[in-house]
Length: 86
Length: 283
Image (cartoon, rainbow over all chains, first blue to last red; front, side):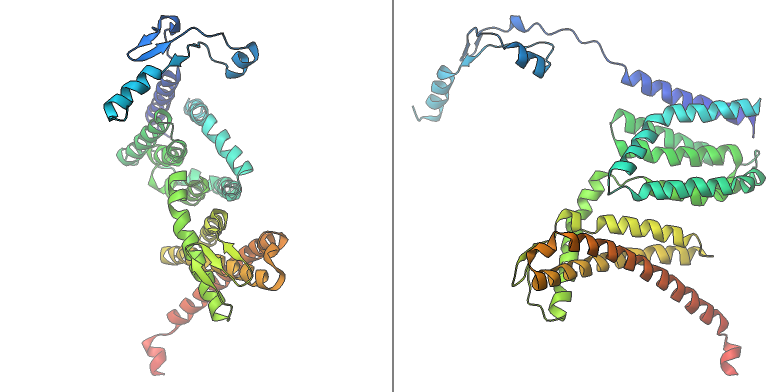
């Protein structure tokens, strides 16, 4: 077999492997700052809630989480007003 | 030097495809829909090993480089597309493409044709993509239901077909996805490829593979008809118990037997045709 051709195939296969490995490398993502989420989102009104219990946190396995129940009473009123059913 | 480079190349291809190969073996070992693959892959390895000396003699290092290089580049591109797009089938199907391209590029066309049979066996061993399997399952279910309906009507069993449900006097028989016959079609096609390999000419090889498809479809329809008959005779339990498993097994054995008989018939018919000449006819 031709040495030059062997080198060509070796080069191509190695390049493909390197490209695949590079594509698989995890991309660093900035940690989300969930505490900055505002309580007021248009017609949505959030409030502080008790945190999740340790078992739930362990089972969910989330690296960041937020427990801010949102009161959507005002939103429902707004939707009803727009739909003309209020 | 070339030997070292060859070893390095084998290692690099092994490194590139280690995950793909282990995934394939795991699927062959665990999925009943893909288990035929392990037989074909083993036959491919065996045939490749038996042809190693013929391969060594067929090597032509000075052969045309462009076609082999193009196929190999195509294979590696398909591999990349499969990896980046998370498509299992593309990643898997790229392996035979890369092997074909590399063999053609490094050893020439004659060497590639020497290894054509094992490469074909290996390609067929790769499980069908889910997209295709899903697309053909429903039409196959309906075809099997129609064949079963026609068979039951022919032998005088009253039946009403509603899509893939056969309404019998004793029970309603649903031709489920698992009964579509896709598994037996693939398995019988795989066996037909092995049988075709023993044929001397390409048209006869194609004929053997082509025969296996309608044969598997019809036999699956007959199996469902037999299940319907068993339902009538022994009650609805016959549609799901050991009888169901037994008919599946026996149908496949009969299908293989019929395929072999058809192959023999074809060989006999063609030999009779070739012996018949205008001169012989005049005599």
